[in-house]
Amino acid sequence: MSYQDVYNGWKNDPEAFWMQAADAIDWDTPPSKALFDKGDHMYEWFSDAKVNTCWNAVDRHVEAGRGEQTAIIHDSPITHSKREISYVELRNRVASLAGALRAKGVEKGDRVIIYMPMIPEALEAMLACARLGAIHSVVFGGFAANELAVRIDDAKPKAIIAASCGLEPGRVVHYKPLLDGAIELATHKPDFCVIFQREQEVAQLIEGRDFNWHGFQYGVEPAECVPVEGNHPAYILYTSGTTGQPKGVVRHTAGHLVALNWTMKNVFNVDPGDVFWAASDVGWVVGHSYITYAPLIHGNTTIVFEGKPVGTPDAGTFWRVISEHKVKTFFTAPTAFRAVKREDPKGEFVKKYDLSCMEQVFLAGERADPDTIIWAQDQLQKPIIDHWWQTELGYPAICNPVGIELLPVKLGSPSLPMPGYDMKVLDEGGNELPAGELGAIVSKLPLPPGTLPTLWNAEDRFKKSYLTNFPGYYETGDAGMIDEDGYVYIMARTDDVINVAGHRLSTGGMEEVLAGHPDVAECAVIGVADQLKGQMPVGFLCLNAGADRDNAEVVKEVVKLVREKIGPVAAFKLAVVVDRLPKTRSGKILRGTMVSIADGTEWKMPATIDDPVILDEITVALQSIGYAKS
Ligand code: COA
Ligand code: AMP
Image (cartoon, rainbow, N blue to C red; front, side, top):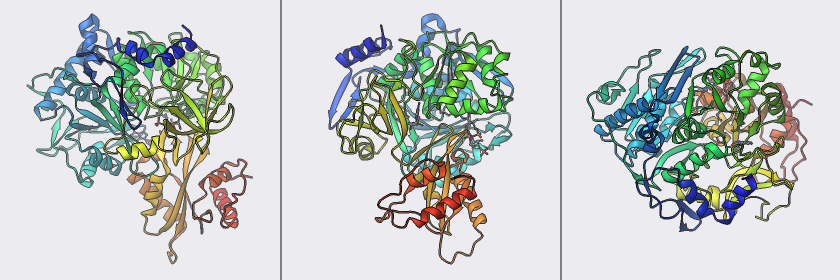
């Protein structure tokens, strides 16, 4: 079947399409139908089914006689260690952990926050929650205590599972003090914490609150899988929105299972038993979907990689892991390839390894620039597939579905909408734009199974963020166009979200931190183009009248403040002090114009600008830090 056949098959009968995809899942009670229309543009999938995610990701493979197959390979060039866990071992470990959590009172529907580095125990913690029907919320290790506290107060977890430390090249990330600090900052307090002690740093436990990962499992009864309703939340994953308050994306259980499983063959072209590697982090949606859940649900071997594309120890790490573990499909972010390319432009490291096992490479998380794709094509001589999706959607929405058919690649486009997505480009008034014209990218409702049904504790915000501007459509927050062949091009965000090294960050959130500095009267943060990371945040600070401060000192302090409040992942290193910010007459800061000036791209003087002279001052300030080159 061609892509067009599959897509038309879905379009003609979505209900039949998803019910057929659901056949691949092991149900306790099969769904009577796929779509449940709740009215007011709210939808759910497979709501009347009963199912357990952990059973589908782990136990059923053991029952089917594949218990000895490797489920997880941990490869850590940072600790110089490698470890394999078979499906039967994984089942036993997860059942034991889930049993211990249950013995401490964790039940279906309870929230559990997971704050862990790239070790198999992070996946085991997620699966143990799934086994009990507990709702996990994984928090990325690069966030600071304050961000963790915000998530604790929103999710109100009964328990937090963490590791003693994470390991960044040349730096130990002290998770336990961050965790303790977050719990102190948060209003909600968890009943207990479980700490996985790593040998690189053993953390001090708080008597009565903290339990050792191994010790607390001793003598407990392993837990069986608890069937949950199809619309039971599997997890909450917080992602950046326009403000500092992150959005808690909810994922329902059944749609998640059906959709992720469907993508493994049709999109990523792997069969059960094949090795699949997504070089991301469990703290991001890519890690949820393609390190933990999809490969395991589909019976693949997944790789948990604790390292970086370069420097651990060199720019050949990716190729070593691929050849050593026989990876068939590799998934990474364009920024990672840019980092490798910068160190090894001629691909000397590529030549050192036998990469014949690898059949295709997928790139996502940010725009894949043509230069990077061409470099990867030249070096690897394999299809390099750009694909587009978001935390909200959970799996590829615009893609070149290699498992169905390798479509002609058009550089700069992630290709065509997948089944489930009827994408349009609309103008501000909601009118559909013709091919080639730039506008807001939207998808006709309902969204397919496995996408967000709502935001945690924030249904109004869900409706306002995604459903209100263009009634009947889901608003992606991205701007772009569709060409005459239906290929979609993603050009920019329509909100204040920026993408730094494939990490989604809120400039609004950073502005809130800067505004909290006692000498800052007003501020703005924009994302400027960066050759390696795609974008980098730059802050503009107007100081309080009478603040008799050395500008460089204030800049240093705000850089430190963002690192402390949001975390190192914000990569906030650049800020300048200016007298005034450019605004419209109605007082809106002209961030878009500032970005164009910084990047040296063409821009027009906004008709509504209050005082054009300020733009000259902004240009000079940007030039002082190496941007806005004429
Ligand atoms: N825990 C703690 N800190 C972390 C972290 C984690 N899990 N991940 C990143 N950080 C820190 C880094 O140590 C760095 O700190 P520093 O300011 O002290 O150097 C900071 O956050 C910024 O990290 P990053 O943006 O990743 O930059 P880098 O300079 O360390 O590495 C790349 C650059 C391109 C190699 C790296 O960004 C990369 O591999 N990107 C791939 C992104 C990716 O996989 N995204 C997932 C979406 S698909
Ligand atoms: P996240 O929710 O962190 O996965 O970030 C999603 C956002 O990243 C999207 O809304 C896009 O702005 C951007 N993005 C992800 N993948 C791509 C891609 N292939 N091309 C362009 N932008 C992308």
